[in-house]
Amino acid sequence: MHNSHDGTHGAPAQQNRKATADGTPPRPAEAPRFHIPLVVEVRATELVEIEERDDEGACWLFQLREEILVLAGQDYYETTKFPNDDFSLVEVRREDGRMLERLIEKRGKKLAPVKRLPPTHGLSCHS
Image (cartoon, rainbow, N blue to C red; front, top):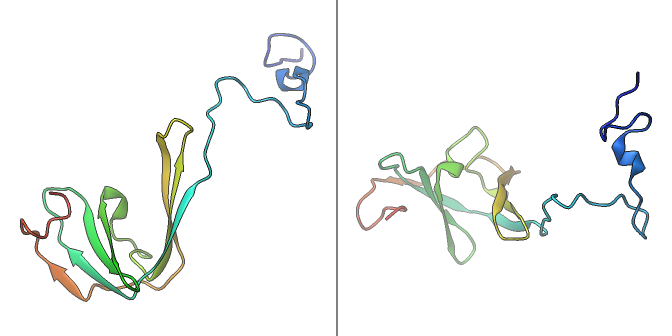
């Protein structure tokens, strides 16, 4: 006996759907629609760490060419390859703006902080 996905015998349900005008299979009505991912390229020359307070996550200050990038939160804990001097931040969102995925594509050399600062009221990344 051959099982199919739509309760009929024979070919799977997906083969029973008609293709769109351009030949691609139709999208199920409930399938989420995605925007093009937002990609931010980061090339850092120096790094400062503000120590974590109250389990709020890591806090890094990356020196870029002419500005400072602050990354803070539990998505940015230190690993064997992060933080480093060359990476991309990638966000994939649904059409309605809800976050689906946040990724860090790591390419560069691991950076050691030039300074580690305690979390004070004026320096906390999470205040």
